[in-house]
Image (cartoon, rainbow, N blue to C red):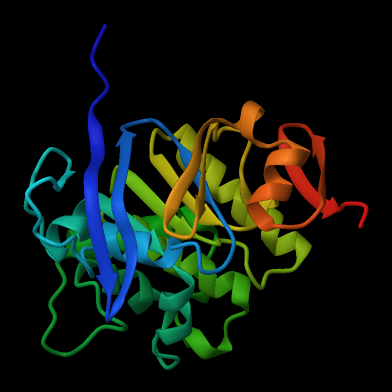
Length: 265
């Protein structure tokens, strides 16, 4: 039986944002094919973890710290772009509104916010972008400006941008935030399709309804610390979720999906 291959292995990391120490002695291991949902309230450190994954921030160079991405101790932003497809709220907020849909997808090859005259694309890259748009059902919107797309359509194009390299791992930050119910369910269907194609999914959220049934591992993050890490069945309980979010919460469950409801005060 093959040993699990570690995608991300961080041990005893200290990470600062400006003058603020977000993580101290932080450890996290993710193996290929091991889908995980990282769940926590605002201020838990989720955005810093995303920036750590995308190589926008790095752990302090301490003797006890170890950090490996796909087995490599040193990785660049370019390495990350090819191996991790990241779709975040910050990316959608900051993306240039004048970019045309096809160029949003193509910009994934350069990790830019639109395409520019100095960038060149091969026919193979153009064909790949078209194939991704067809897969996501957005090919008819290829010439529409980003600002004229709905929130759900924008999210699909940014997913296409992340998929254009065909990375083995997708990292999704609150993927259905701002979507209506129909768009939310459609987007989650797209995410589940990527799971069934063999991609490893890391979902960073504070919304339980975003966690597809296929994700079995849940990590509770709060105050820069991992409070719990284990099977979804064990962690998604009324008591544990209430403790994580500091208020009474009751969970509803159907068909492998969870939803949080207000508990008794």
